[in-house]
Image (tube, rainbow over all chains, first blue to last red; front, side, top):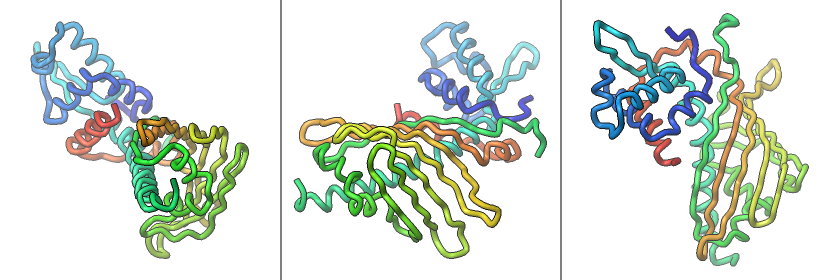
Length: 112
Length: 163
């Protein structure tokens, strides 16, 4: 369905909401129907469907209707774009900030 | 690769917070003192530094060339411009990173990086936010087919940590 990854902006916006992250986490364990997705969530079915629409628009989730059941699954392509970006930059900054912490520890006595 | 495999540039933003048991003045000095900056930021295990200049003032440019691992690896470069500096409080830079190739430099990202220092008790809370354009690989991400479960859980955890 998706020919190319959705822009990262949409993926990050979609993941900025805790309910949608919970839905994505559930789907990362395997496909689920809309009612299975809704079951643990303290909200109406129509609210769940709204969240699902945002996840689908971001390209993170794809769904498919078979008979009366709509099954949702993760689409790995949009995610790999987001993941690559975060990993590349974030890891490198975290390493630097760890080294800054070590540097501040080591120079504690000599500077105040 | 055809034109319709675009988007060619991916955008992303992330924030990292750390707390250090050191005053904002001391944390700031880790940037403003070139020897200190080189020690924690430039040098790193496994890195060979070919060149580093540090010009820490508004409008000042820093440039580094370095390699990770052995000589078979590419030489990378970092070009940084200091956009805003408020002593003991804030450092805003823009920077480009890329690798050298026989055909010339290949820039792979261009970012705005904001570091804020907030006094917290006897220590400092550091908030680093990076907003960037990832220039190189977005096109071929479309061609990668990957399993996603482990990756996704990792991403979800990272986003949880960040929130």
